[in-house]
Length: 117
Image (cartoon, rainbow, N blue to C red):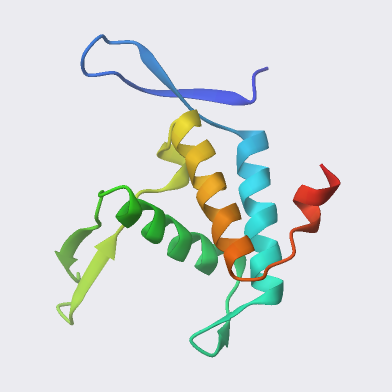
């Protein structure tokens, strides 16, 4: 059984696009775990899922792909929705891992998971 899933068809040619692999997902989560253990943000310790949301949001802005903004469903404010990593292609996930790694290095995060690889 493959660790790569196919999702969506290319609008131009109809080819099935491959999404991120389990290995890529594990690598991103290892980086985000290291960040969550070493870096506070806005005075708070954030968990891996919070860091993932922040990292994807920054990555999307870096790549000129902003969030979708909707009125909140309870009528109190607005909500921003960014892409989910399980919908990213292998190349996009590779780029996100590179982005997260560079951000971590630039912010003094030690990445033992990557150093061991």
